[in-house]
Image (tube, rainbow, N blue to C red; front, side):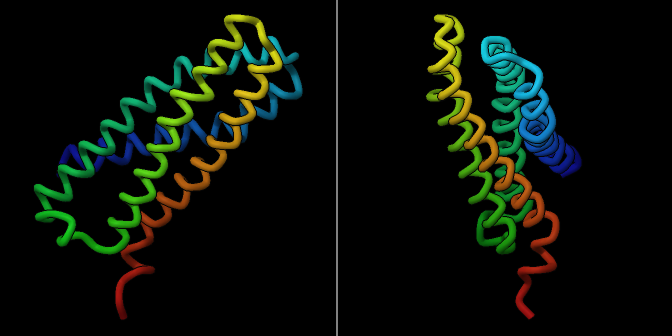
Length: 155
């Protein structure tokens, strides 16, 4: 537990914090300041650096989470409702990320390489919507994981 909890939390902070920064801070400035070819090249580069970190975070979150559930709490029957919700929400987030990585991000990379700015814009718009969804789900997951033990306990 001494290493699992900090590893778990740091991985969530990196992933959700990165999505927050990208979606709420970088994206609006990029839209206002950069023409589509530069903007698409920027995002292609940003994702190329951020997504390996997300893969590492996904593996870390799964590994540390399941380690805590099965070695500390004795399995899923030993954890409270908020942990079940956190796991389910996290798995949805991971599935969305895997889709982003293999479908629209691949399309973005190919479009940037081919200088097809229209196709790149469509791929980036899809990524933006899915990252927005994952960001909201990630923030909700953090709320459930930190407050759920107080909100979801039977009276």
